[in-house]
Image (cartoon, rainbow, N blue to C red; front, side, top):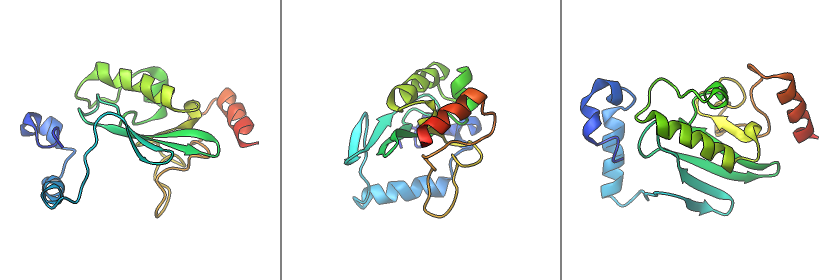
Length: 158
């Protein structure tokens, strides 16, 4: 919220990703004591953690969830696509490029493997895939998958 209501929002480059009414809605919920803010690492429930992953925005957080197949990270905008993470090339819109790359390392450290990271904008199974579903978590998209990745996925699935 500090970012979405902060000094950079006066510039269209930074503000274009926010709807003013959505930001005002969160402020209203805060005034009504209906939201809880977290910074750093926080455990929301057993096996569900928030982690600060700045770079794309100052307060960006990712979610780490313990599943049957290990720790899965819902990366949100910490990495838009697998390509960004695997090539160490941040998405073109970011507040601090160095922090984006640092957050890439955090994602890798939090997840059981690269196949356990669900980027925020990747098309296919890792993206939004239906009502109530945030990410598949049991496999990643087949787009740009190498033979090595396919073999690793088969091993994880068996």
